[in-house]
View 1 (cartoon, rainbow, N blue to C red):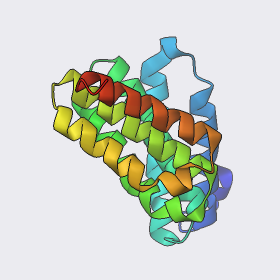
View 2: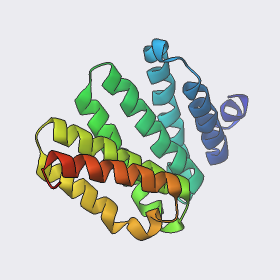
View 3: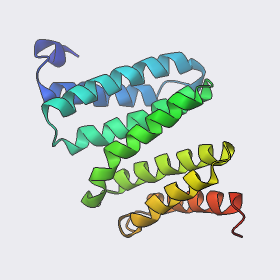
View 4: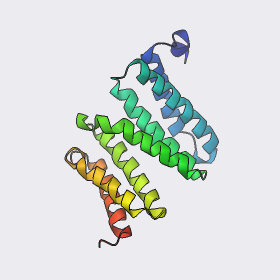
Length: 168
């Protein structure tokens, strides 16, 4: 935080602080959900600042997508489904342009957000939206195929949607 305070225009300092806060938030117990949410909101703010100053920073974007998913999970657990959906959608928008990089973590984040959104769509009875999300995943399958964890998340989303729409 001292490096950021010394020069608030430094993209690297914003990114480093955002990443540190992300890691800290991941260590906050689930029983302290309000604290976790506050840390993640701050994390997102610093990472967005870093990306504004350095739009090519893939690392900041990966941590931003991760933070958005993690915050979505936290707000959903406190009953705010709409905010969770918005955050998962935002994380997909952040991760999608990075899919071509072939980084497993990017594909995992994208697949995870798609899966979570498809589950919510199913719970809301919007099977068309759920199937649309799986189709998005299928379109990225060549990249996802390179990542074991992303393949597992993709498969889980695909099975949930197929089960819900009675394709079995």
